[in-house]
Image 1 (cartoon, one colour):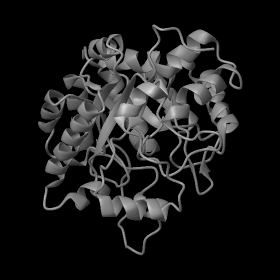
Image 2 (cartoon, helix red, strand yellow):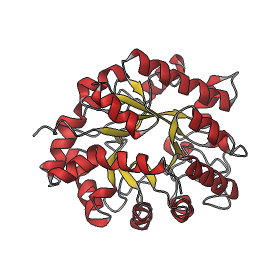
Image 3 (tube, helix red, strand yellow):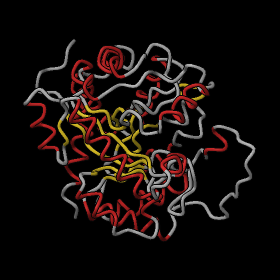
Length: 343
């Protein structure tokens, strides 16, 4: 069953193409042994039936170090500008509000909302939050693949891709005082806090901090650890804490190296579990387009979001039509709209 014309499909977590320099990107693709899907340009979103994406620059040193001699901050700004150029080249409209997302939909154009994954460049510089907002950024992931002085991560880079590099483990886990300052700045500026990649302590403390300010948080690409025991997924108390803020968990069609979700049926088990635990109003979809290292069986990429994932929600997961539309986009639009009215 196709979605009614008034429905909008929103992917809560994507990247632009080429956020890593070409030689580094080629090496990364080679390291995944062909599991990483082909890049998808913003010009393909309309054909894929995707109305809006949150496209993120990456702010941690896993990416910014490859943009030397630019500073990490300049690297993030450079990546955001690249997303802007790619959106324009693909006929997409940059959207800084839900109203602009809907306006793009009325023009039959996809919308691109800017984001940042990894708030490393904000440590010690909470004033940069305002600059990001002025540039159109509306979602910021607090952490990514490294502990960054704002919070701690659930799956550090050296554990995900084992490297013979000695690393120091944090003696204290969770949201740091600087991290709390950044959460406050994001919320009061109207930017959604994204807790994907955060560990349990950081997730719970950030939810408490943002919730006290009346702000919803998201975990843009994740799952339920009770269904699949994967360090990137959330325990039940974390899921409840996210939902208690009014926030969302983005269902992630990721599979690589035996981690994540195996296939569409497994992905639906996450959807059903989340619906029973926190309710369908707290579920979205985040595919990690152009950044994901591998995909579950039965899902080939962004062009399958509607024909595969939407159908699976209706049939395998048993969601009614109102809940399907909420998960595909309505919930994400609600949280983005609420964030624009802080306090």
